[in-house]
Length: 430
Image 1: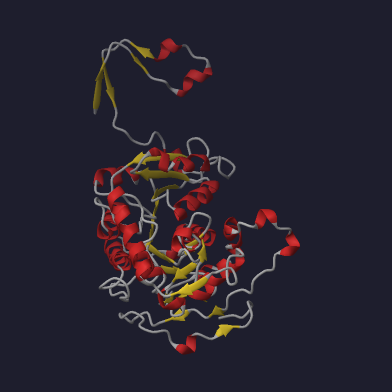
Image 2: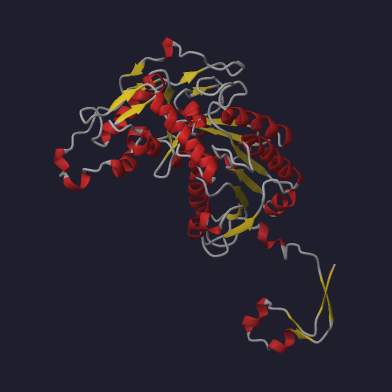
């Protein structure tokens, strides 16, 4: 019980708008006993309104990591269903100000928190029946390592959600997460993929019914896939781009961010999805080198303009080390790092037998169609070209998805030749 001592206490109740006198809400008592904070009524558990972004569906969702690429798209989509959102943040308010326009007034609540402070996390999920954890930075800082973010932080959120009675928890991991990842650039393999795999185990221990999503390489306007490989920093002075093994030993299946959001919302409200793991990648796999070639040809900056693929050399190594040193010195996100190259260029997307888009009855968009809008930003000759002048490049070859037995603990060491048969038509089924 909270006791407030004052000469006068004014309670701004809703009845003021009905024309009642202000004096009826003014007390001359010097001691006022205030009850503990609790729900004012049970009406907040029921739907209110006719549906849509101005209504309340009866669900409250806490979104960790909402300022990221997937989190931003998720907030903009789910708020249209009338779901009230609690968005914890830990950085400057300018980092999440773009989220304020996603919903109507009163539909989004921003709450400061610290990932290592259990009380702030407990307060953030106190009134929520749904929780989504998008936290998954791909670089380390002096305050948070991969283990702090992906293992300890994920375990802490899952345990508190279980203790607070959260109905549904969705945890985002990463495609190819493995406790023993393949070793190419970094001794021992990617620490990012290793910590993501350990984070899945930690979440399962604390919240057995949690839904785990492993997205592939996500692409959109603000991604770190298309924007990275078309960046001027990624190329040499001679317009050559260095790729691991010329990009011929890696096969990726990029997925559009909108498809990831659609799948997340569907499993979030599906009781039968509890305890399941979903691997969400694009409908086709592509040889990484051919995929990069097509992106440059689409922007009219490919073969014939000086562009060529090369293997990493001394200049590439020095440039990568420089960006990592710069990020550590100025405490910022590196343009790219050995970790990112390890999991993007040197690790193929391999399905392990978990559920996919097909089980959710969602048809993901192919990379050639969904990436065209982003690639137009890098077509520097577009303002000076008429429509009939541009010749569309030949699309990259489509390959069947790589698969392995879900019971295997070792990572893929080589690509089976039987799985590398290209698909002759886009309508061929897997």
